[in-house]
Structure formats: structure tokens, C-alpha cells
Image (cartoon, rainbow, N blue to C red; front, side, top):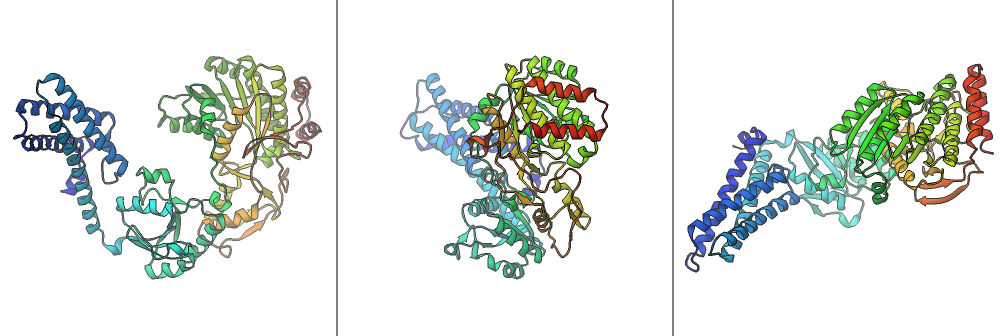
Length: 609
């Protein structure tokens, strides 16, 4: 029976549930009528009309709120509460309408019928869920189930176990470990807390464990590394608990919702909590244009902005494939947002101005840029055209089209740049701060370091090298970099932009710098290997690279702090006329790439003095 019902489509299941619910309405009304038969005179016609009307209202409300189709084997308290309230409301509305239509009316009958119907409707769902779970458990032989250790017996572990019990799969939690001595011996969801993490190897051997799930959202990087090392030795995969909100609303599935421990967990970057009211006030109801919308940062800004109900998002980029991908990704959850894909090159001013005047953006996030340091050392002309001319064109179009605000994505490589990429980004900062001095539009730049997982970052390179069996290549074992996750950086860019009013250069707090060689070691650990299995080699510093990056020079001391993660730097500015003269000279010069690079780097470094 259970198997047959599971094979039905959504509409067939809905019809069956409505039939069951109709029986619940009729049964409850009849029993309530019979219960009060000797006490009150209530016409059978009244009972019939009340029941029919209550059921019709119930079907209408449950269809609008999609409550009936939400109830399944994964349903939890929120789903059942909603269905219970809809049942009560249907009876109450029907009773009120019946009071108007009939001379006779019984509060006692109506209340009893309402409560009885609601309880019967919930009971049928709970009965179905119980039958399904028991049927599934008898079907799964213990030998076929994947044995899992849960690490964490606190709030996260308890929430996880509650969700796990509602989601039968070929997974069996065989033990729980927690370093809190007071939790030892506790029983959580039918599974005992055996002790602390020192027992991990023993438990893996005893229970033939296949996986470990970490249910401690705030676990520190050192503990994560220790768990990974112990599990790697026994070939046990390590996952982490999904977001708590996903588990609470029943979106967790043991076989499909598992999340691998990632590099940000080992670097200890905690999720940034920002004032969402400020973000919503900045974005809601506005038209947003994003250049470089197909890139790592641009696409993530598009996702983040979408959460705050803008009227329209214009996705502008030069690469048609990347714009196509982000456009169709966003369309899946479009809601009321209008997405407009635009293929355009920031080096083409007339095209940019045409788009700006047509789309009328309120805010422009300028993420389009060439960012790869060694490549730009070899191609300084392209770095000049895309990063300097492109930014100048966007800034001019913002002014000409009377756009309210422009936020430019900068980089820590703009500080004392020895390379052409950093130098062009420093000149781009000068362009937006200079334009702010003469325009009615508001301009600002946001400066931060490397982002984990972006196309030009070292993470994808390490992943590919690991997949090939190594070795991992680090240019210099002394080299350090600042790192931030793509979602964190993108949201902070939007947040910093909300503070902009006078050409600021915002600096994002990147935390402590990380040695690239340590990053490589952590990537090997995440892959399930050891450093004995995958070698790390030093390959030598590439053209234009620095051993250490900076977010500020000594002369760019922080002016003020807007937030725990956002500062305003006292960054030197320059009149726009001087920058335009420099751009014009380079634009018409016949210098070779080497001389062009030297001029840009020299100009960028002189501007900081």
C-alpha cells in the first residue's frame, strides 16, 4: 500500500488527501451532532451545509498556502501547525457564515466540530508518516545501512537528531561524541553520547563507521583539522551539518544535504552578520546594474542583491557564456525581480552610455576587470584598456546618465603596486574618487584581498593538482595572502556601498594573512590525503608577485570604522583633470608594453604620496 501511494503523482496524492479530509469533516460533524442531539435542537440541514462549506473553505485555503502538498514523510511541527490552523479557521468561517444564514445556531456544536476535524486531519497525516517510517525501517537491513558518527551533542546535535529521525534513509547514527564531560552518557534521539573526540578512532573501528558528521556550527579550525586527520587515517568521509535554518524547516536529507568541510572552515572565517535593514533600504525597489556580472564577484553580487527585492538587475558582461549562465541561474528563483542580460564591453563607451540611459540604473556595481597578476604582466596593454579605460568609461557613463551611485571593486594589490594589475586598479580608484569631486553622482571603491574559490584564486589550481595526484606548487613558502569567501566579500561590498556619500575608499577587514603553503596543507587534508601522499613544491615567485600583500600604506591610516568589518581609509586622491591627462597620454602613446607598464606603475605609486 505504501509503495503504491508513493508511485502516485502530485495531483493524485492531493485528491486522495482531500478525500480523506472530507471523511474527517463529515465524521467530526456527525459525531458532534450526535453528541449534542439530546441537548440542542439542530436541523440536519444545518450540519450538512456547515460541513460542506467548511470543507470548501479548507480546500481553498490549503490550495492557496500549498499546505496539503507540503505534508509528507519529511513534515515537521511547522507543517502540522499550519494545517491545524487552516482546519480551525475553515470551521470558524463556516460557523460564522452559518450563523448569518440560519435561525438556529450552536456554538457548542461548531467548536466541537472544528476541534474534532482539525485533530482528525492531523491524526491521518501522523498515522501515514508512522506507517511509512516503520515500513521503511523494516525494509532496510542494518548491514545495508551506512554507519555514521555524529560529532556534537549540543543544540546543533539535538536539532540534527530531531531532523534525522524524521528523514529515514540508508543511514544509521551509531554514536555521538562531544568534548563536554557533562554530556557523556546522555541519550539524544535514541543514540548515546559515548565521550570525547579522543574516542574517535576506537568508535570508528568498533562500529565500522563510514562517515562522520560535525554538528557544531562554531567549531574552531584546529578541531576541524584534528577530526579530519583522524578520519583520514581510517578512510572515513567527514561532512558538516547543513545550515540550522535548513534543518529546522525540514530541508535536510541525509543522503543529499550533506556538506563537505571546506577550506573556509579550516581558515576560521566566521559568517558575517550585517544589518539587513540597511541592505534592504539600499536595494529594494531599485534598478541595479552590475558590470562583470558573469565573473566570480559580479555573479555573487547579483545573487546577494536579488535577496533584497530590487526592481531590476541588469547583468552586463563581455563573455556571453558567463552572462547566459548567471542569467538562467537567477531566473529559477526570479520572484518579482526583472533580470536583463546585456552583452557589452566596458571599453566601448558609447555602448555603455546607451545601456545606462535605456535601463536607468540607480546603483552600478563595477566588478569588470582583469585580475590575474602574471597574465597582466605579460599583457599590460589589455590591463590598461580593461581596468583603466573600462573604469573611466563606466564612471563617465554614470555621470552622464545621472546614476545615483557607483561602487567599484578594488583590491589590496592596489597598495604600493609593483605589478601592472595592482597599478591599474590603483588608477581605477583615482578615477572614481576624482569623478566624485565633479559629479552629482556618488562614487566609492571597496578594497579587499583574495577571495576563496574565485576563478583566478589558488584554490581551483590546488584542487586540480590534487586530482592529478600532485605535487602542489607554491611559488614561495614565505608568501602570505589575505583571504575572504566570495559571499562574504560580495555582501560586504554591497554593505559598504550603502555608506558611500563622498568618494570613500572602503577597506574590508580580511582578518589575519594566511601562508599559501599552509593553505596547500589544508587542501591536502580536505582531500582525504596526507602530505606524505601528495608533495608540496616551491616553484619560484612569478613576475609581478609580492611576498606580502597590504590593505593600506602607512600614509593611508584608517580614518574611521563603520562596522566590525568595514573601514574608511585616508586614501590619497587626485583631480580628475590630471588623471584624464595621464590616460590620454597613454592612450595615444606608441610605447611598447614594458614602457607602458613602467609608466602605469610609476603613476600609481606617486599618487599615494
